[in-house]
Length: 178
View 1: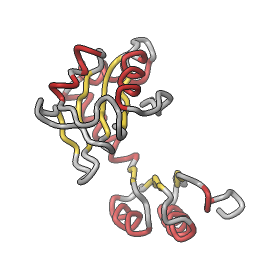
View 2 (view 1 turned 90 degrees about the horizontal axis):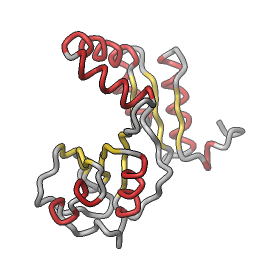
View 3 (view 1 turned 180 degrees about the horizontal axis):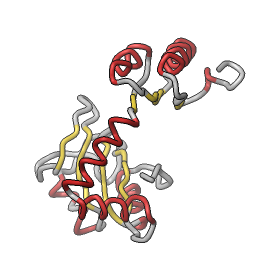
View 4 (view 1 turned 90 degrees about the vertical axis):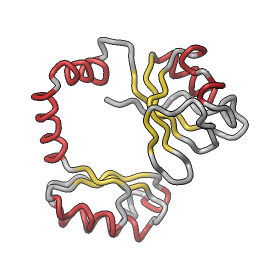
């Protein structure tokens, strides 16, 4: 970890096939860089709280995700197919992205209604993660006032999302869900 530059790293993915190894790497990395964002894999559901105590910010269980995906495919096949096309195929020019509101941006201090993102920009703001409590507010109400640090979950074309990033004062080259 030290040879790889863990002290200056911003993030780490820990995804070996063995939970004890993932736990050890997570614990070691967190001790070397407490500010590190760590995404860790857990095969066994009982390992998740241990990984979080060891310093993982996010824990992913491929088996749990696969199980939910299989059930969703059975119950909502059209919805699942739509999301697959939108998020994975590249056939539609639609993206789902995060966009952080910054201080002195066009969105700061404006309500959802005042910002009127859908009409002005074309992107749809599906949810807002509040900067203070970390809670995710789906279908944000018109009176919700955007604050610096809020993260918008938005859906739209690349150009629409680029315009939303500019309005929020953030960068355009962000992670895309793939």
